[in-house]
Each structure stands twice: as C-alpha cells, then as structure tokens.
Image (cartoon, rainbow, N blue to C red; front, side):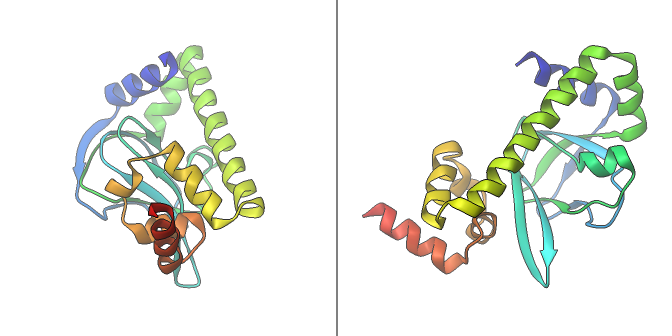
Length: 178
C-alpha cells in the first residue's frame, strides 16, 4: 500500500531507530504523547488499567504504526499505555517533526488520515463485537484475522483483549481443537 510506505519512510527519515526490550513502556496512560512509532520488528500492545486489571485495546506488529494519535494531536492525556510485548526495533518520530512533515506534504497528510480512519474503523468493530458477539465468536474472528497472534502474544493479554478471563480463553481454545 503506497500510503503505508509514505508514512513509514517519513518516520524513518525524521525519526530515530531504537531497540526496546520486552515490556518497555513507550507511553503511560495519563501522559501527553510526544512520539509516533513505526514498528520495524516487534509486537506492541495498547492497554489501560481498570481498577487494577489490564485491559488490552489493540496489538501492533511488524510494519505497523502506533501512537496515541488523539493525545499527540490534541495535547491531551493519553487514555491508554503503549508497551512492547517482545524485544522490538522501532523508529520514533517526535510530534514536532511529524507535524512539520505533514504540513509540507499533502500526500503524507492524506496517508495519515487514511491510517487514522482505518484505526477508527477497527475500534468501532471491536466496540460492536464486544456488545453483540459471544466470547467464542470474538476468538474465532481474532484467529481468522490474525492467525499468528497466539505464537507472539501471551495468552493473558489475548484474553484481556477478548474481554474474558485466561481460564475462559483456555476452555474456548480446547473446545476449538476437538
């Protein structure tokens, strides 16, 4: 996809390549986001704390982008944390450099808008799935859309993403195998 390549190249050009260990916090819930990231290699999750429970919102993999775009753009506290799940190589671009590049390039601005629209669509699907679908159906959709997820993501994070307990996830997976 041409748009993805344009965003990736911009972040690489204006950003800094960094290696992060597993469980590195890139953004804390409540902090104002200063960076957008391109994931060269790794697995990242966004999550928030609900009364001591981690609730995973989304996973991001090689070739993806992550930021709290709302926080970055509006200078508001982030509603979620961003954390590496495995050792990761990321390109981090500061918001000043990103916004300068966006102002200089209508094509880049359109590409970022498309990325944000796709992210918004994902969040709408997740929200509606939590309302209308059973945990088993949410699990089946996740496996269909992202089959390698169980190889790279700890199961308790997947359970949190699906809105179920790790025990319930284990039961669903065991029934699915038989």
